[in-house]
Image (cartoon, rainbow over all chains, first blue to last red):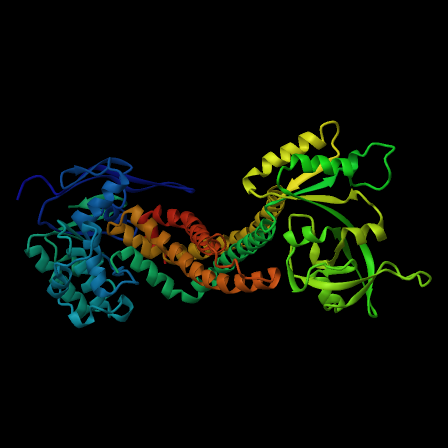
Length: 226
Length: 394
């Protein structure tokens, strides 16, 4: 494990130009996240959580400041380079699961492998990862709308893991699940962190945030507690 | 299925099957319009070409009526001197001087009207074929064209009274010796199907015009020498002023072909309009597909799908719609095209020839291309969405 941070935000600001005037969603934020960190990002709604999440997920670029992921400067990257970073470095887990509705559970997990290797998976990796998150293999030919919330989130986690990302970015991963299923999902995330992955958790639920080793609190686009 | 993006497109089409099918109907209609119109035009051209090429070895010489000098008689024609000049220039080719006119006629109680040609009976059988009966032997024997024979109920041995019936004068009568095989449209100027052919002598004794011919045909032994023979005749007969007009099957063919070509292009353009309408409906369905799947596009983009892959996915979808339309359109084109060609031309003999049937794959290809082009903008729009905005949309 090296001492260079996996993610570094250096004086990052994000300003949205709205008709009603400029809105600063992130205001000169600096932050380091090390490899194998388990970080929770908290804050009330409108505090900049989502914007932070989009920055960390390389879905967006800062208006000003520098951002480095895995030692590479994201702010100057082309759209295609950022797409490849998202595909190879980051695994996304969303509150609403966001599975691809036209694909089966298995194909949803296989999909990132196809994006990376430009061919169908023949190694059995997709099936293995699905199994590792406790997904019933008999269900793998079902489409997302035929699965329960917990099953969908397991598929989503498998999809996030299948390309061996360094970072797992979880946006309210238990928000749409009942308490019991939510706890199971959190146990899976804890296990993944134990295996050496960096987990970033965006949540407003303090109970969920307790799983993290470090909590960053945002308010009005600024870090108030780190 | 190898390509996941193709598979996604197939599933999307299948999910909205009815909508996709309806959009494809536009393409079906467009393909049918283009293919059957193209085939109709081509079949027309092929038929005319075949009929004209039956007399491809014939040079037709007619008097140039426009440039007759003042002082000549009202009766226009090729005179003895000109005929001799033609014969001299034509070498050993067969020269057939022909009288022609149109006349009223009566067969039994049936009245009719048709052309009457007067020519040497020996010349007649060089280019006309008798399908029934015999050639002209006796002085008042006649050959009758197939259409005229059918219309007036003429049989071998029938007697035809020639000329207007004015009661006071007995009309001349010809006896039908033979009935000609149908000729259709020909390039040699002898429209025999609706005509009576009589001997040269019979014609001049009843219609006059001795040594003044309505047209002279030269049947050339070697088709390749047609230009030379034409030049020789022209240099000789038209040396001072233009007194005769010389034409042959190829010159007629090219003028008719170019007219038919123009008509074909025009009807193809009308068919093309239906494809424009089809393009609009495909565009519409593709935009609907993109707009319904904004969130899905957001998911795909956020987990690392390249813009080009998103574009490909939607272009595949347009392509599939095109293929559905083209396949149905191709099948319908064969059926409808066959019926239309049969009904309008009366013959489907040329329908399956390559130059006709090629319009089916051509129409199909154009249909698919139109679909893919219609999908370009929707695909571009999908691929250029902002993943964050797209994910947020419900």
